Amino acid sequence: MRVLVMGAGGVGGYYGGLLAHAGHDVTFVARGAHLAALRERGLELRTQGRTVRVRSASAVERPADATAPGAGVDLVLFTVKTYDTRPAAASLLPALTPQTAVLTLQNGVDSADVLGGLLGRERILAGVTFIAASIAEPGVIVENGFSRSVTLGEARGEAVTPRVEAIVRALQEAGVEAQATGDARQMLWEKFVVVAPHAAISALCQTPVGVTRQTPEALELYRSMSQEALDVARAVGCTFAPDRADQIVELFRGAPEGQTSSLQRDYAAQRRVELEALTGSVVRLGQQYGVPTPRFEALYAVLKARASTFDGLR
Image (cartoon, rainbow, N blue to C red; front, top):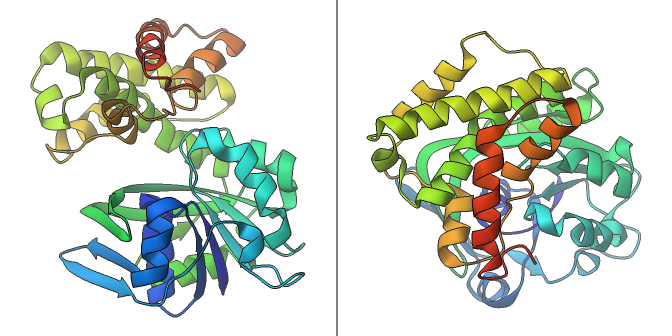
């Protein structure tokens, strides 16, 4: 399979690296020192107590440089930050054919719709992944060993198609816990109602899970925000068990004590943040569907003000 990784950071670099190590023709789109390291030394994945090396990693700065004119790729792993979705999608066009599948593994619940409008809905696959992976240094991706699963399906909500099955097989053969779904919207929201509260609270507190959950008031805030996200998801048309908010809190209790969120890490490093795709989405959709989200609104206001101090919303 010819694979283009659009965004060779923690998520894209990790899954692209495993596919390359399994023998697939993978090209990484990267920039700066990371691009230089991929070209000079290849890619190193530190995962599950072992080191995986892709010594001849193909890496380019622009998707147009990934293939010969008209050749295209079979699969794009679309893993850029949500705020880069539109420019990244536009740059992809030279690498696509009518048969190319574009699998988004981004945060939030909007990316598949946005990409469908830009690249054609027939190309888009929606996916979710539970993984904590990041660039430790140029050319090196570290994964924390807690989870590395991918669920994907047709963004248009069709039954599981042959191309979805083929991608799932490729990921499984590369050592990924992959599965297919016929209900992409439910899948996206199943992750979102877990991630959105954690992202907002952790970004504001700047404490790892183990510290945050020792505070009873913080746990109650987490449960209440989970309930707000679930209320919005139900208004959108998703279904959940009545006690789903309590189940989400139990997941929080069982998470590794040192776990942090990507939004938290971006705030700590004063990088551009995905506030709008996470906290902001709950607020906007709540307003759209008439669902009260007072806790999300409060944290959104504080986090937005904080991001303005380092140009995090540029």
